[in-house]
Image 1 (cartoon, rainbow over the protein chains, first blue to last red):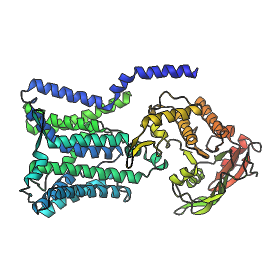
Image 2: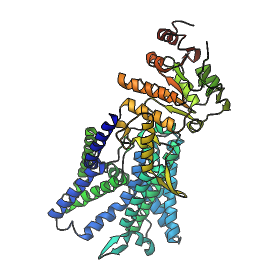
Image 3: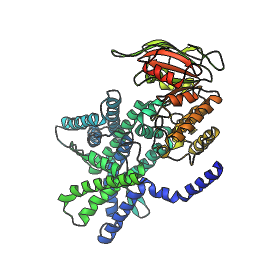
Image 4: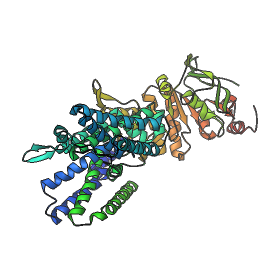
Length: 331
Length: 255
């Protein structure tokens, strides 16, 4: 009897495979992105040119790279508000070493180390210091920005070597188009972080901490270690974004990336990362970051006043989250 | 007071004179607690009596202020849940044990994932874990639709059954069920009680914690009752009726 039932149920499971694909959280945002791209391609002459497309992707690559880390943090049920400042600080650190004659690889490594250290400090304050993530990372947001202003006296660091700027400005020729280097870095990091989250024990535990921290702890997993790790990874990835951004701009201003934490968090959330923890994918984040950037460019191309941009972006974030809630309730 | 066991001479667990204080509050004041081989012990007491604290001392969540724990005759320190698990003590907490957003398989192997790879580069072996989870659950009579199904979609009884199946699969010697039937329908409760007896038949000892005297009475060989951090006593099933137990929990009557 039970075997008959099992067979029947299995058949039903196979039949609903398609429905499972639809229920996947990324599908909704991919459709939204596709709709936006189609609309803009038809409505404007300029959107579907490789120059514009690569400008878009270059501009969102460092946001997306930082958002991969933010995604992991949000999956554990936390949030990292310091990413904008860390992006600025790590890029600035690299730049300051570069103008003092430190070789490019060392200066870049130094910038990444700065991000890693700030991230680790966030993790330690949250786990060992028992601070809520919002408070701890709000503190590092101000501290990192304050250090940026303090060490520069408010002046930007200029005249960065060409070999460094190439990291952000060089295009790799693939076929007959030049693909921006930051885009390639972003895609490689997307694959690595995605595999890390979905295929490794540590990734498994990141979801577990967000899904039910108490149960995870009782299962014998050191949840503090998992949290310190995700904040460290977030700081490190954000620093990669910061270095790429600085290389692209060719100058490190102490105010660089101010308020970028909002773009990063928006990318993660629009991409389906749930603030209640336990849910989110790198693919979703990638699409979320793309949506935000296409929206920004699209509004400009369609002639919407730049002064209205933020209002529309805010609206899109709210709609995206409401759509996600609806999808979950129907499940 | 009698201390009957069915089977081996050495108790699986003997907790001696356990004291646990939180600041100025004394949660446990010199409690002795024994679980024999292949025995189902019902641990009973009112809210705040100290049941949960006693179990948390045993599972390494709390460190006792005073007292010793013997596991299979050996004196042991249980400073963390990892250590408790390594000894073979598996706990199924009421709602805490599983992660609703994750699949049955992932919950089953949480903290003990099966991986493949070489050196530091390892990845999860999901097909193997799916296969093992399905077979382990089938083995104790639990049929799942799919091991990939999210635990949040399962009924309360099914969730308990996964926790019980997991304990057995990983070679637990002592299974602790914390309020396993509190939120379940009559049918589901019956299933969980059956799984409990199945687990005993297969050689496990079980601590069954509940408010519901009726449920405990159906499966337990012996009842340990605590009240306000003190041991009231141990009673075998033929010594007491359900009503006696209820009176002992509330302190209406001393025996």
